[in-house]
Image (cartoon, rainbow, N blue to C red; front, side):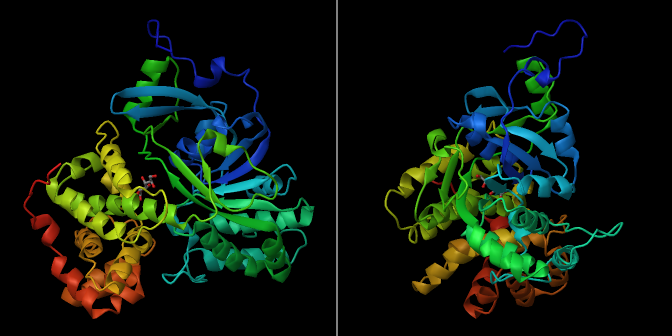
Length: 480
Ligand code: CS2
């Protein structure tokens, strides 16, 4: 489709020529309508052979904007697949309804419907709101309000004017699961697609903790009827820019307010039961496994871990994108050192770590994907817990220092002290820790990531010694 724009006529909106495309019925409800959902789960659903039976109703998080923009163009959008050699364009139609996340009435209606079989989640790692040790944290932001709202909803009766409804995505999900329990529509699967280890189990704990606000009847129903599926998800999806929107208009000849750009690579590994069915995602390349741990560790440690090193070390060294940072030998060495450590603890048949590392270098080096380091730098306390801590702990248990993982933590601590706008669920605690000095500050910041490593004087000394080193490193070329 090449653009032919005559004179100054406005371009037709994307769905103008495609209205005849039949919409699949809603059988999947998604929470977290963002770019990643649209480049990943929506792509797999569109490419499943039974796509015509599986429509997605996707709910936004905090704001309605993404739903409004998508609804205005019939829920269709362009996926721009950006390789090192060029772009290709595909219209995705698997999302059939886009809804403001605050519309809990619609959410409850859809989740309570017998046709709905799957609820998928991309709500960010931080939104699960678990404590650093992985237990349910009734004091996490928004959770106490959710518990109160759920308890009020459980007591039944007509809802009073202005009565609160849960405000967090998982609080809303619990309300909707209660509606399904009451409708008798039967079991379903909840599928976390966030970058957390054992994300199915994390989702179960976070949902059950909130369900306690409703009461034992719902807790028992969820335990008996909801299958929490674990997944490892992968597709680099930078934030869409004004240039991307202009490129789609020029290349495709229509106006699309909501295109999404992604690398050609994609991967989805799933483990768990789907009691009410699911699309044949495996025919689109997804992999169903019994034991997901080796795959999720490989992805979380090697890809996401090195992303975090590049995000903090790279920005400290003046870089803005993943590709720029990786081209800096000082950052590249830090990544390779961390990978060497992580690789020692990645056991499992067919993981082929050398090939995976090489593929990551190729993917990160794709300079046509402008993946901003500032985007990756957010929510460090939650992310580092999954990315640095397990490797550090395994290395130290094996009698080594864990200096590669320690450098990731040190780079974050330097970055957090730089006065930049910190986006983190624990931002207030980070600011408080920054008021301390020296080792006390390092220890206080480490505690926000993991009490275990903060309580190890060896780790505190190691990380303190590495602070300041990343920015000062001279660039020693790594042999290719
Ligand atoms: C990134 C991920 O922002 C981040 O923390 O590490 O979003 C990463 O790009 C995806 O997991 C790739 O699949």
